[in-house]
Length: 501
Image (cartoon, rainbow, N blue to C red; front, side):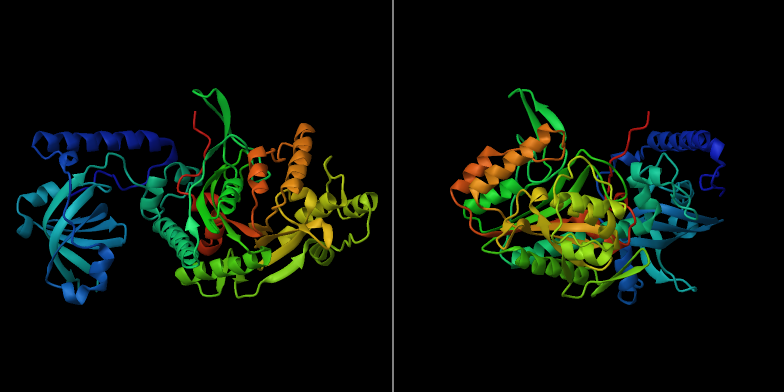
């Protein structure tokens, strides 16, 4: 039977019109089915016995036996009184074989099914002469009618804008997308198992905050009508999690969505997934070791071993990872030694290397960080810990007692991307209050990323918080690396998109 051109790609100028015509044809088929008492939308369930890959894996055992499968019809080839087709489920696809001798009058009805329809199939397992595992259909029922045509299998859905807007179609048209998100789920499960084995308790903290704290970022602002109060979507759960450390929960973590009202690019989305953990009686050296363990567990869960390839570059995850202080990294990779410099000399040295400084670069620490950010970060391809961050940009980290201008803080980098951030947490309430006040002053001077003062958090610290190590890891970027995806949008099921007019 002719396939009414449902499966042929149309020329670009006629796509919208042809889609409308195809939809009209399919609506007509739906009306015909409904009139005959076979409305597919009235189906409530289907008793499936196997998925496609299970049949392929156990083909010797299942050959000649009855199975029931269900999924989306993604191809069909009519040959008079027989037809071959393929059904797609969440595990993959499998061929089905239909014969008029077996199906009788039902064969003519089934021939009218369209690519995209969701069907339930009962039949016997066999293998064709060409070696393809198949199901010889003895009965078939439509479970849902597809009114819109799918992208063609030979060119797929390649328009990235459309892929991200219509992820439901992307998942059907591009099997590798399903694989990416299954790997994402496996990676997150591996992290949870590791932390559970280490005695961490998973907790949930507020997403709506009255103070935007825990990170240097711009928040989304909303309003609570009953309280007549402006609130903020959380930018980080840090201050709440450390309150739990004060309360005696010695190992806690949270894995969830954060929200930052900032730019969008291949590494940034306004909402993203982060894992933060805090461990009492530990420091940032313990957090480095734990970071390596987390990546090792993820690699093991995904079968990557100790090496992954990202965009053509091999990344070696074998422990231990490289460690540099920020000053040493800038000296090694940018050729600037800030040791002993005052602000004027530091600014001159940075400018000579092309570093752009803004109005906030009023200290050697801020100039050092600008040089690192602009010249060094992109060169850190293999896993690298950068330690000893300037105190000016680390308001929640403990001072280095031997070098009080620096803090016990690190960030971890791979492939030129920041992948995580950790501290030996500041637990001195007097110092914390002073740093909050310094941040508040910066905010009044126009620094929109400066942190807000959280008086209740200072009160919590006054009750006493033990020495604590804290770690935050960007889950989306981690998934990007393990799945070789170039953009964060490829690892978010529904990335933020500007609405179409």
